[in-house]
Image 1 (cartoon, rainbow, N blue to C red):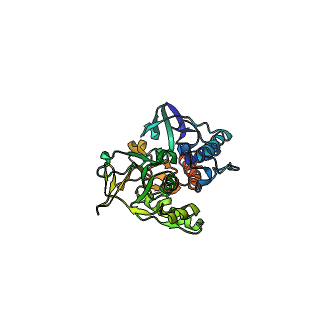
Image 2: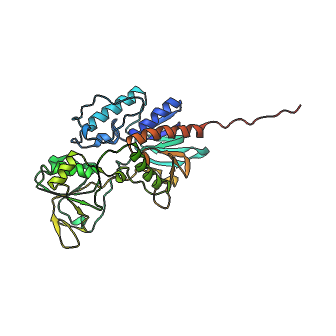
Image 3: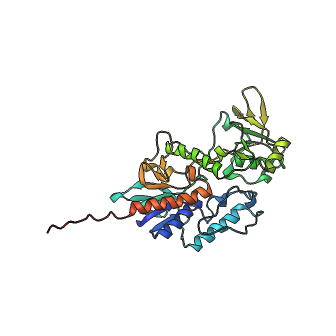
Length: 356
């Protein structure tokens, strides 16, 4: 059994930001990361997602990311940056360590059970993000499909789709990026989404960003599963997207009703033949290890005030819901540490009065 004031689970943007603020606060902490090397979820991104294509990457507190080659894969650029950040601030991340469960222990402590043993902590910062929980929708006939099915989490780049008929499912940024890449090598592409995509033209400033985050935060306060910030901001209408709309690559079709052995079909009798179905359907929060603490609300999410789990003030979620963006994770890391300092501060001694 190892002891720490605070255990941080995850060493992506949210975890490293939290660790930076914990270090400055002088708290005893441990960072556990299941990934094999620095880089958070970025290290698993596909090679053609170059740094220049990344939307809204914000530097970690205390160390800017400058001079990065926009043509290099983002996995390399950000992986090297995170590695430099850990070394610069002496964060000593333990990896690879898999966290299996967090439970209530004796004396008001939390027990963090892992592949490397158990830690006993006074507080916990959960910064596990979503990459480890890809969301795969289920449709009638899915098991009969004779082609390949894969998710964004396993997207290998456009070369793997050369000459294939590809159905891309999902109306987010990843789905659009996949389509624009794959269309150049595939025999045919079809874009399918549950709702008509909303494209955002013009600037997206601080006021618009705050409004979008507020919508996500409201769901979290109600104990509902968080939506991504991107889901309420719309898709940026850049030059590549305009070209895709003009060429017909981004000609969206409504969601199909079933999957057939040879493709997908709609209730009106129309069908599309496919060799590959690529599910760009997003991710869910990776929080199953928190289940023993019974933090979930009836709505399915964890109700959070700021970063603090309402059902257990020792637990803070950073990078969850409204703090899922890189700049949001930075701010939330600092906010979580400020609350944890107050939680762990010794109670003021009772004032003694002496008669006489």
